Length: 310
Length: 310
Image (tube, rainbow over all chains, first blue to last red; front, side):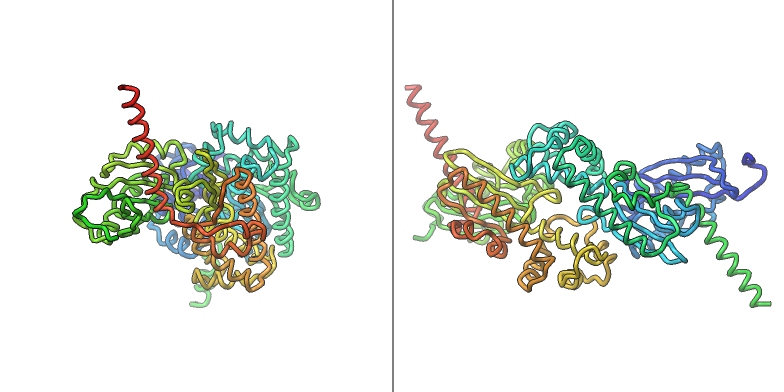
C-alpha cells in the first residue's frame, strides 16, 4: 500500500538526535517509512541552537527524500528522541522550543531506542556508540545505568575505547606498559611519528574523535595484542555487568545497539550474548512510536475528561 | 643590598605560564626578587592570544608590585617558561611572537621548573599540579616522561585524581563499585543530590575543574575509604615509577613540585620519598636563570666569533 498525498493521512516525523548526528524519518500512520535524512549534532547539551537546527534540517532532508518537499513542517507530528534531555535543564529548554511542527513529543534517546528495538513494547537496550549506557522500560518504569559522559564515564563506548588506546599507547611509549602493535597503528592512523606528535594530535579532542580510534583497539585485540586485549576485556566485562543490572528489572527482551555493538558483541560474556536479541527497528522509528503512544494517552484522557464532564 | 633605579642595572622578568595561571617575577642581576604578579592561563596550546596577554599582564603586575610601574617592558630581559611549548607548533608560534621585551628566551615549563628547583644546576623534577610529568636535565640533555595531557594522560595529577573520583563515584552510585564516602563529599562539593546532577555538573569541564576535586580523594583516603585508597595508591605508584625512570638518567638531585606534591608525597614509595630534596627556587626563578644562561652562551659565541674574526 503506497502513501498517497491525496489521502491527507497524518504523517509522522521521527527524530533520533545524538552527539554526532541527527537522524530523521517520515513515517505514515501504517508504519511505511517514506524517507529519511541525516544532519549534524542533535544533543542540546552541546548547544541548543545547533540541536534545533539539526532537527529542522534533518526533517527537511527526510521530506525531500520522501518526495514531499512541498509538505510544510506544520503538518508533521514529531516524536523527538534526544541525547542529553535526561538532564532536567536540557529537557526543559528543549520542551520550551518554539518548534515548527503540528505537535512535538520529546523523549530521551534511550527511551526511543528501546521502543524502536522492541516495537513499542517493554524491553531493555544497551547502547554502545560514541557513548555508552543501559536502559530498561518495564511497566512504564524507566531505569538508566551509565550514560555518565566523556571522559569520566561511558565505559565500553567508542569514546572510552579510543581514550584507553591513547592513554595506554602513551604509557607504553614511555616504557610503563608492554610494547604494543596498537602504538604503530595509532601513529599511522593519526599520521604521527612520536609520542609528542600523538599528544599534539589528541589535545582537546572530543569523544567523537576518540570513538574514531576504537576500531584500532578491536583490530589489535583480534590480532592477539596484549594491551588491546586488556582494554576489550575490561570494556566487554563492564557492558556485561550493565546487562546483568538490566536483567534485574525483568525486561521481556534485551538488545545491544549503536555503532560499536557489532565489534563489542564477541567480547561480552557468553551467557549475555546468548540472551540478546536483534533490535526490530531503529531509534527514529521508536520516536514515532513514542509520539503515537503519547497521542493515544492524550486522546484517552480527553475521552475520560468528556465522560466526566457529561 | 637594595635595588636602586638609578644604577640602571639590568632587570630580568621570569615567567612561569601554565594551564590555569601565569606567574611573573622581576629579579635583579644579583638575584633579588623585587616583585611578583599572577594572571590567567599561559599555555599557548589553549590559545595563543590568551597566553601572550597573560604574560604581558603578569609582567605589568610584577612591575607594579616592585614599585616600578614606570619601567617599560622594553627594558626587561625575559625568561619565559611555558607549558605546551614542548610541542613544536606551539614553540614556533610563541617564538615568532612580536614580544614587548628587550629580549625573550623561551623554554618549556619543565626546564625552568628544573632549573629553579636546582638553582640552575643539573637535576630532575616531578611536576604534579593540574597535569603531571617527569623531567631531567643532565649534561645539557633534556628527558621528558609523561606530560601527555588531559584526559588521556597526566596520571597522578590533580586533573587525573579528580577524573578518577568522578568516574569511580558514578560507577559506585550505579552499584558497580563499593559504596564510598567519596560519593557524599563529591556531591556536597558540587552541590549535587543525584548521579544525574553530577553528570550535569561535570559535563564538558576542563582539567582545572577536575584538579579542584583532587583534595577530596586524599581526604577520603586518609579517612580509610577503600575507593579513594585505590585511586591514591595507583597515582602514587605511577609517580614513583616516573621517579625510577628519571633516576636512570643519573640526575644529581630530584624534587617533586606543583600544587599536588604535598598531598601526594605520603603515597610515594618510601625509597623514593627519602631520596627527594626540597626545591630551592620556583619555576619563575628558573626562567630568569635560563635567560641568563642563554645570554652567557650568546656572549661566549660572540667572543669566539670576534676572536675568529681577528
